[in-house]
Image 1 (cartoon, helix red, strand yellow):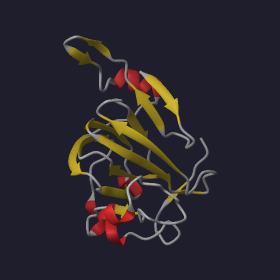
Image 2 (cartoon, helix red, strand yellow):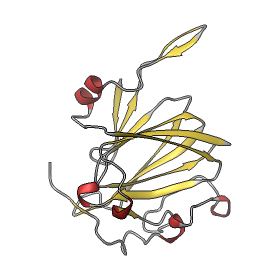
Image 3 (cartoon, helix red, strand yellow):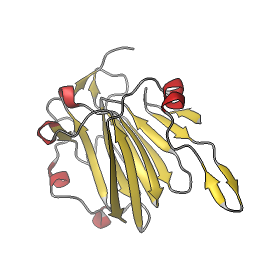
Image 4 (cartoon, helix red, strand yellow):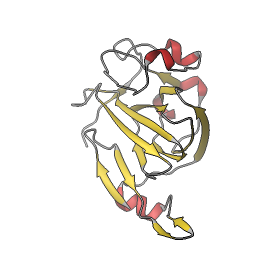
Amino acid sequence: MNLLKTDLEGVVILEPVLFGDARGYFFESFSRRRFEEAVGVVDFVQDNESKSSRGVVRGLHFQRGAFAQAKLVRVIEGRVLDVAVDIRRGSPTFGRHVAVELSGENHRQLFIPRGFAHGFAVLSDSALFQYKCDNYYAPQHEGGIAWNDPALGIDWRIPPEEILLSEKDRHHPTLAEAPELFEYHRP
């Protein structure tokens, strides 16, 4: 597995080693030992999967307090633009984001630690998206940031009039208006 650092501390891209021949390919999509050697100890407790059509934007989501989640995300089929936003007050990169294309072809994974909001936009006709979480989903502790917050400057690579949102994602506050974010703690 190759580890690529991003501009946000702790947010990393993982590239698996593929073994291919005329029959197809094989790769380890997750190995606790290799993950811990590359990233550190994270106790994943829940796997999730979603399927979405082109133009869907999911996010920007996070869970608060003791229910915060780190995520390891990947795309099985299709293509998405995956986005992580630093929402740790006092962080030198507070309000900055990383956007990475994940696809069924590049097999990349993105690790997003606690303290970041996460979202993605579907760039292909459809996308099958999987992710591991290190904490259980707790709807009463979920939070969100507006996908189109101008202060974030995220280019979702989809014309705004073509973006499909859930009702909940239409009403998230901007980062400046968001209550109960995270506090940055120097490593």
